[in-house]
Length: 210
Image 1 (cartoon, rainbow, N blue to C red):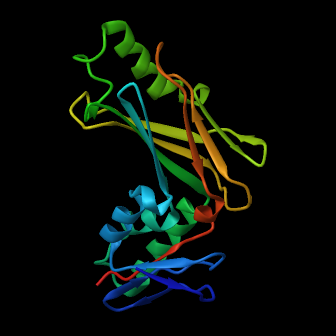
Image 2 (image 1 turned 45 degrees about the vertical axis):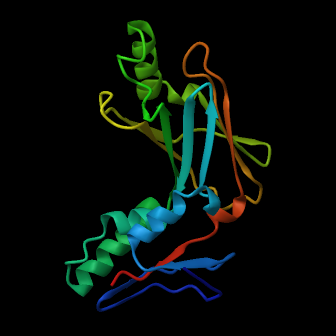
């Protein structure tokens, strides 16, 4: 991983994918998308925050635009098609800020019929699928930002965690820290609070995919 102080540019070189965005704080360089994913999912990066209460662990990870471009780009396209797809992905995912919410208990998804009674299972399923905007609060500079959209992936208790993709308006125009609060999703659960430094919303990445 390398840090760069460069003017903004975006280019493609045969055999390499170069993704550089405005250097408002610092841009980080990675060999490939796998290295980027490993970095943003580490607590040390500041992109992932983990809190645990009464055995229930919640993790919130900020997913930058570079993550989505690398996830969906087709490296087998010819150069012209590659550039067109790259620009389309950047424009689409660059309009919003994305966070992944993960919930688990004892290394398994909390939404599990073997862990919860029928009533709790149904309530949690409804809250994650249809009512999440009533339970998640994001504040920055004393302003409340509502969820623009969200999507719950139901793995029917077979995954290690419950996963919800949360979408908010673009946050890079603000300067304060981002506070995300998750209100109790079930009776007896605690409130979870996550704080993200503002610099991560102004940073993008160089991906050198060989």
